[in-house]
Image 1: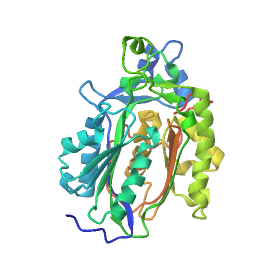
Image 2: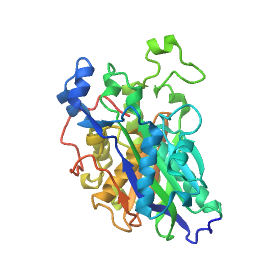
Image 3: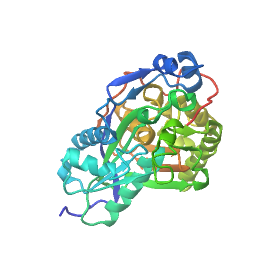
Image 4: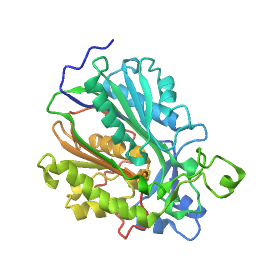
Length: 362
């Protein structure tokens, strides 16, 4: 068995991302969704394009590619993994766990594999589980935590509140021992199940099994009450930021980079401005990938590192929120981990170019 960690903290040793090759432009989305234009999508959401999985690609395929890149960045082999956690709301199937599929695809024969279902907050929830697992299990040293979603399979093109926002993608991190001064310093997680009906895929589970009626009613697509979800994110974002900062006696400007879930760039930018977050410390990736669910926050973290915006010792605040309702925050001290990031373009956007009032959210 692998020797126990000698460090007192668990941090990121390497990161990898994966985006499907096909890009869907706002023009393509507008052609399918009645009553909107490409310009309307850009102005109201800040999303310019998103990536769409090929017919042969499932969530596990995207996740396995991202984990493989994260392992390469960390200089590790799959057989060295002790734990694989997949955060996703769009699994390959209801069972087995998508993590088991990933385990088989990458050949991580020694790892324990499991899924965490916390919607767009899934990667942060998974990182908390992995951090605690590695600190407490003396036989475990390395974990892979990956956020992945393939929303394109679950969208109703006639529903402009969802069709304009969501895309497909995966982002993975390899976690392991780091110096006590680095790594994950804190987590703040929460849920409110009374809001579970505000955004969901209502059919296909044990409550509403697949049938001709659920298919006719678009029950297998993402359904979201936009105004209520916007209100939830409006309240959750400052609450999570404050909870993470206050426990450590930090202020907003003590954080070097904010790597957040990307409900849409316009909404995220507005929330950051309201919280007093400097625009040059906010990472925006949703303009070129859309909302990629559980992959959004780790993708933003990988993008920040790839763009040279992180240095050893940088303080990072990661937040995410979404269906459940669920919210999550983590305070991370960056330790200079290598990143294999598949950027969707060559730009580095600290804020979207578009302005307007968002009508849609996570």
